Length: 329
View 1 (cartoon, one colour):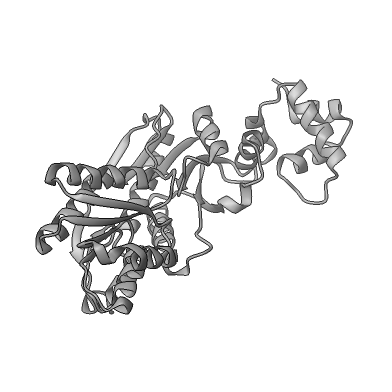
View 2: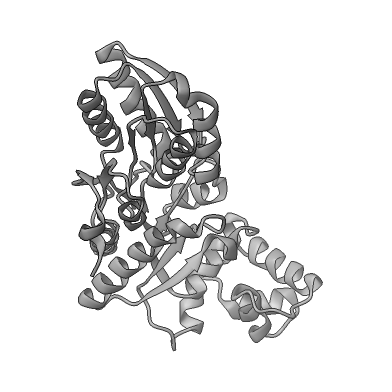
């Protein structure tokens, strides 16, 4: 087996230099990095052997890889609930975890990401917020190098599981209840992000309802933005009977626009974020327990790390109308 010593000799550098390159230390020249990476490739060095040079670090760790939203502080609540659930469950199970953000690895290729995680002795990764556009992470998942649990992304292989709710059925259920309560026929549907797995499933749910109930629908992309949903509502809601939004934040934007227009249209959201309780208008929403979802992901990554096969885990949801008294402590 090729060792880190062999790589150092082949590259003409010190062992410590190879270790620094593998661990992404700063202040290493591009020329040195190139020599070391070429030696790694030429010798077919397997980064798993890094563990022997990093015996001071704990093995079998789990990384929480989070796509933190930077443009909408109002929904940071979801990420915080994810973190709280994972940290609590990991502590209960004696699992060592670290937190990594998408921004920290966005410029790395799959080999560099692999070396980065292996240098941290990571055995399992829980990924939050994966989209179809994250091609490098898709390569990482396909490589089966790590045990991986995906939140809200239906990619499954021997080493990869998915944990989520049934977004298609949930969107169907909350929209149907809102439409039936208000005898609506013409829907303005404000969808989430293009190329998003969650958006795709929720679209399937609303389209199924429209087909079954023979309703009219206009679909617009809101990108999970309160402002964009507000603008869409201003432009299109007047000639519709109901506004169905693929997130609570967009539902808030839609409701505020309707208030400014001085017209009433029922609005429903999705997620069950606390902010919904402060709006002053009761709206149906899908309540997800993000903390429990994340805790379940930790249980699932533990199962995979102990020889389990990848699978889909579907958790429950509820339809609720959040009120102020429901959320204050």
